[in-house]
Image (cartoon, rainbow, N blue to C red; front, side, top):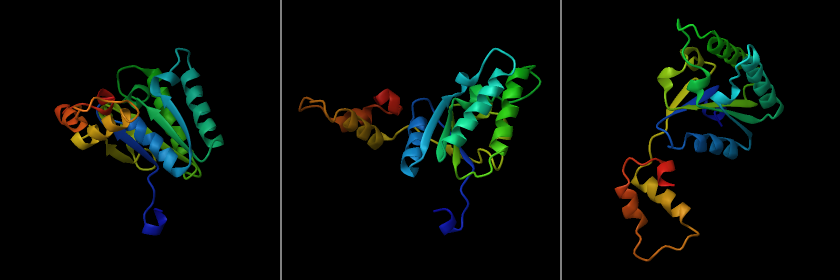
Length: 184
């Protein structure tokens, strides 16, 4: 689709926004709409206290994604896995970030594995991950507006009988600032 418009698809996307706003749901929808397999990992799940094990887990994850191609590889809580490198002396975190960069740069056929990551704190992620050819598209996922909250409430109560005086629209309008998770 991108080529037909004279555009190139981004190599990866970073979704950011407040907790519970639907970042994971967006990633799942991308996989579903594209007909791709979906592999989801929370950043902290890859971390291991033994030297070299976290890097090995990253390598194995990317190998698994290539084997499952076409695949959307989703990193939730990327900030926990790939914090900014610096002089804080956390060599283990720096090795994990370096391994992630190596794996991202090692993709030959980018169309077979698509990277999506999510965070509540994009400022905490190592900037090297956000350079072109890696997670080069950054998208904000906002809290749902009143009509979105009403839609969520309608979907959640579709099979639940409600009293006739329950007004989902009024509830949604009163729930300003609620996330999709709060609404659920």
